[in-house]
Image 1 (cartoon, helix red, strand yellow):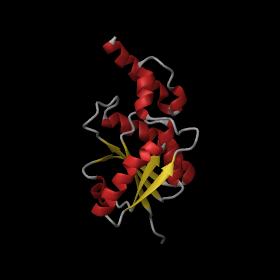
Image 2 (cartoon, rainbow, N blue to C red; image 1 turned 90 degrees about the vertical axis):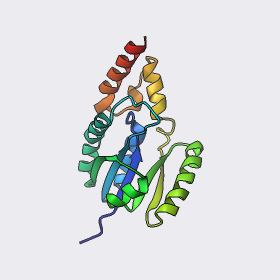
Image 3 (cartoon, helix red, strand yellow; image 1 turned 90 degrees about the horizontal axis):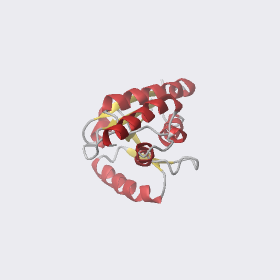
Length: 173
């Protein structure tokens, strides 16, 4: 039996964007099992709670898993990233890069992770040109200001994100 290469793609995915989906699709061509790790970012107030983000991810990645034959699971990340990678059997951490500004931060993280876990590789996938500008933070800003966000989101979750933006606008307006 062959080796099962497990990759971990971590992020907050709040909300999940077409840029994230692009990275998931491309990562699914590289690994046998892809764990999409959803982090609880205590420094941010999320638009969606952890359970909601996991639900949306699982809904969006199920067809990708079916199309590619790759096992794709959305799971909560707990603790230090490299410790979690070891716990779930991941030998590579997949990171998406949109622009040079992402690289500086990611480069520092790779160095730290390599020191902590030299047996776990980091792989960068650059965003496709049509998705390079999409950031969850910007999608939230546009949606909270009443702008159209459907261009940046998977169809399966667009209505949910638009409804949450409307709820949040109503609370602050």
